[in-house]
Structure formats: structure tokens, C-alpha cells
Image 1 (spheres, rainbow, N blue to C red):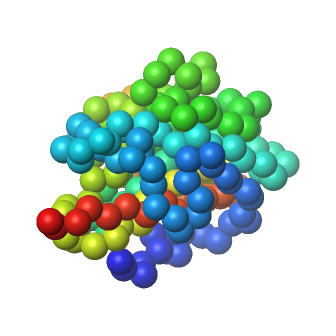
Image 2: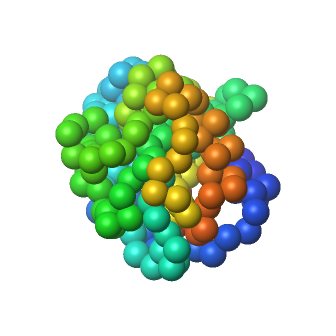
Length: 178
């Protein structure tokens, strides 16, 4: 497992609390959060349940992302990117990204597997543990002007100048080489 933190290069912002019924910080994901679509047996591609609190005054919306910086690519791997989540939202149920449970007005971008919504963890067998940064971004505008066909990296570029605070947890996943 690498030690690189992809958020260290971004402007420092306050933190707020993010918890999940499906994963604890720096603990392994449950099988449901692995990717059956990418060939992991038992994977359900279910986005984790999330709850957050303590976003700062001035927050007008939220974005949620999941990123694997340990993927064997030069650019990591985006598993989830959702934005324009209403400020009144403080939780998402499990599998919200792949059902009709995302709040009205939310936009979900294509992940690096090529479809809008959530794709679960799928580290290459024998590659070692991967970290999955699940981040809730407190945003200073109600809607980000990001096209629905944009990439998660483009969303990140827009979040660079609109994030007031971040809450995060890191889930772990590993597949044995057997």
C-alpha cells in the first residue's frame, strides 16, 4: 500500500465528520463494495452508506467522490463522482449511487469503468492493499457548472476553487493472487 495522499497537494481546508455503516476508516470494505462488474466474485458495486455532519457555514451543496490512488495507472482510478447534492442532505443510503436514492438534482459522472454511478473496489489480484478515499466535499455554490459528460478529474478541478471543507474516510480492499 502506498502512502501518497492525493489531497495533500490541494489547499488545506477544515475537516468535518463522515461515517458509514458499511466501512470504518482504514478498514476493509465489505464484499458489497467490491466490483462484480470488474470481475470480483461476490462484488455488488454498492456505494457505501454515508452520513456527515459539521459542514461549515456557507456550505450550499455537497459533492461525493471515491478515488483509488493506488491503482496501477499514472492517474489513479475514479470509482464515484457525484455533485450538486442539496445542502439539506446529510446522508446517503447504501447503494444510493446505483438506485433512485440519490437526492433530486444530483449529477453523477462516468467513473473510470465507463458508466455513471458507482463502481466497486477491484484491485488487481496480488497487487496488495488499495486505499479508497471516500470524500464528502462541502461546496460554496448550490450548483457547479460541470457538464454531465465531464470527467471526475474535471469535477475535481472545479472543486479546487469551491471546496470549503472535506470529510473523508478511507476504505481498504485487496484481492489475493491465489
